[in-house]
Length: 241
Image 1 (cartoon, helix red, strand yellow):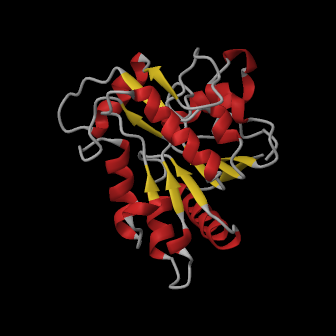
Image 2 (cartoon, helix red, strand yellow):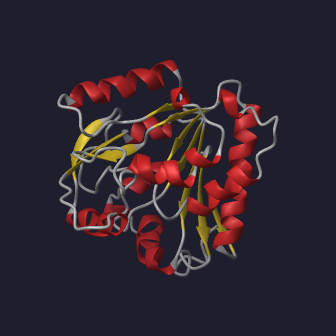
Image 3 (cartoon, helix red, strand yellow):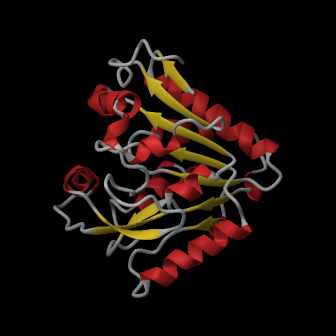
């Protein structure tokens, strides 16, 4: 289902509400969360509105993706962004966070480590963003749809856009990411897209099936909703929502 919100603020509030609901309702809550600019407000609202009995101590967080060759403590790493936007704002113990390490020598083993973790602790809530080229996590257009974690070659547009997260120009060639199949198997998924800069890719996702974008692999599921603000949805206002 598509839900269109009048503002990014309203969208962020609804996502925060859903995060709290899943945290409280799921017996073993496991969140998979995108980093970046789009979900920042949602995470801040979630953190600001947590109750003392929120069950945050029961929450597990598993990594969605990471840049290969970038240490997690480095500015611009996916871990560092989530740490700043969420982990540092809520009473999480480090043992509750399981994240890809993009500096490992054996990256295939790193994929297996995260895959095994998800098999043991299935994801109950996923919050995804969408890249300017329609990617989900670091699953790029034109790549095979993966059911498990994998190493990916980053597209030119992803490498270019990602520079905004780094203070200095940074070489990015590959990433490590969950597969689309793992995201789809989450109990609940929200795909958040905001801002006019995303309006064209939103149009392509919903009106150009031949584009074969990774985000389109999440369409048509009852447990997956696309949350758009009015600016991102400017070209699809007539779509059923």
